[in-house]
Image (cartoon, helix red, strand yellow):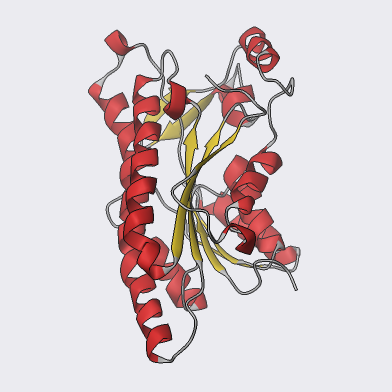
Amino acid sequence: MTTLQGKIALVSGSGRGIGREIALKLAAEGARVVVNDLDADTAAETAAEIGANGGEAVSCPGNVTDPEFADRFVGTAVDAYGGLDIIVNNAGYTWDSVVQKLSDDQWDAMMDVHLKAPFRILRAAQPVIAQAVREAKEAGQSIPCRKVVNISSIAGLGGNAGQANYAAAKAGVTGLTKALAKEWGRYNVTVNTVAFGLVKTRLTEATAGEDSQIDVGGNTIKVGVNPQLLDTMEAMIPLGRAGTPAEAAGAVYLMCLPESDYVSAQTLVCGGGFMF
């Protein structure tokens, strides 16, 4: 028996990178996963990989910042699998600038994807979870522990130059987590945050060419870290290196395990020992 056998999981931004590894990990442990990505083909590829590995997954492509997305995301889980047990709010990106050059659009984009989108997903999930709890009580059954894992960053804990918008949004994730832990404790839902440090993905490793840009909502956004700066950042990490997407996924998995059923309103830092 796998540790998450029969659980139903939503993982936003799970077509690539860390999100993909989270989806693969949860599925490998028995969860049925709803995969999301901006790119429909990418989401479908990850869902197909899960299926090829013996797991179960469906894709729900789309932009998490669209007002209608949250209901559709939650509805996909209910329609495909009949419920909802795990929510991982992972989708996001960075759009950096020093504060005097930071536009309103850059600020709003980070708030929308990192804070408003998780809020909307959780709001959409509440009726599903509340109904499941009521039905369990009426049937005299025990209420299973459900899990919410909101993804943050060490930038949200200690700030980071050039990322006032991103750091503020990720700091807000902590407040959202703590508030929901208090609201949803009565449903036997734990709500925690995993804050990532430096993890090597296409958003941190790309430095030149087409891979150094992404398109989000019609905005072309430069990504990547200068190799020399990357080396400097890695040297500051006690473990001496950046993390891998699989290691980041492992930290999320810890908060989904039955062994963490009495851990809530906490922030787990996955950063190789680095702290601001």
